[in-house]
Length: 202
Length: 339
Image 1 (tube, rainbow over the protein chains, first blue to last red):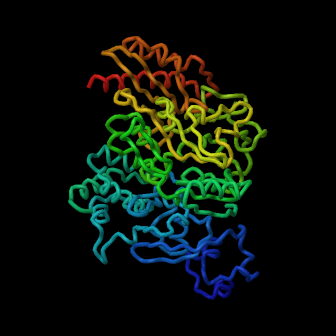
Image 2 (image 1 turned 90 degrees about the horizontal axis):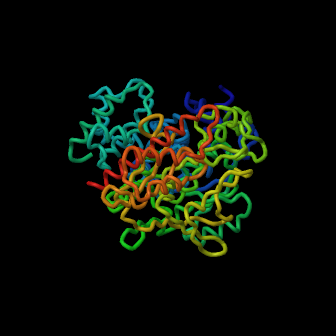
Image 3 (image 1 turned 135 degrees about the vertical axis):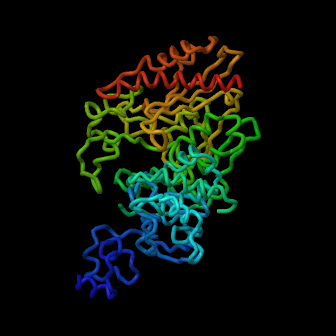
């Protein structure tokens, strides 16, 4: 895609290429008035809005199209690709992040709603090179296979423990039911959560 | 997704003003778990979104007075874990707890939940955009286009309250519990505030299934009020699903009992998953009044609740399942009475 690279003035990675129109609308280097760039856009340009949010402890002033989901803001504009797009309809949990400490489905959260609020993603969980206890527990218990649902599982699991809902296997299963794992790593996931729930602070 | 403008009023009155000023295409958004989802499917097409979650001080949970009062923006997760609700009104706590996932309960509000739209597969699919493209007619989505569910794959459709235009199930759990407890909502609109009994918030589909609620344009729900009752302690929300958790009801029963020993003095029974609006099973309630609760009377009440039910091709099982769900719920609630 040499032409695209030339137009954008930035090197294309596989991700920006795959991002298609979403990556184009999101990139700040693009002028919307440039007809050469505007051509690939298939959707009408919507209302834009400046928001100021905090992501993983860092202040992030960013301009968004008001239609943008928090998930797309994180992945396409802030390049935090840990949160995954599974169903994009709040049914699978792969996009789970924390907003002001509470777990939410970022795919069904308007990005505009996190203006002035604090977002934590899987990228913000570890302390430097030291994994969060839940990340380590998922490794210890082999709580994944393909790994696609894992960032959402871990963010939901951390919240589950903090909420005080990791008190039994049954309760863990109930409070993790919003996170689907098609590989079926549920036994390991429940074991990992039980391991972390035994500790004092998560 | 179609473009829209986005406003963030700081008070309920300002929200109503913004709605009325925006005119056609205006829509309130709270948690957005239903609305934003349907916007992605090109089913909801608001031109102006008014985000009510920026309104200050509209999320209180008041349990001290003669009524329970939940302000509209209280998250489902907060009401579900309120100590008084948990102790005295398991019917309410369970209805919230068995609805959605914790992620969605954190986002969704108790007011917005009342206005959730149907999960009928023919309503949700085929609107064009990202889906298969106008394959399925739907009178709720496109008035006058027909109903693909009637004569179609109707396993999930309603057996109570349906019309020749629409058989879509009212999807909520929370409104079913509120209907059983004679709750009402406080609403604010351009003409001021008023109260609407929950049961009157919902319309039967009739020939206009696109009209689901009795709210006037610009009216927003500001609070839910539940009269306190001792029956709350002897209550349950029993929900039967295709899987054990995180699914919509095939059949559900919200039950609260006033009892004198083993005798039911008054039963309140709401049905979910089987009807086109949150359903009050008055015939079943009448049958139980003054009778002891036994397995036989519980099942008789269950069958009375479905006496007028009519099945399509694939949803006949809901009638017997629904009756037995009511019977089980009555048994659970009665057992709580004794403990």
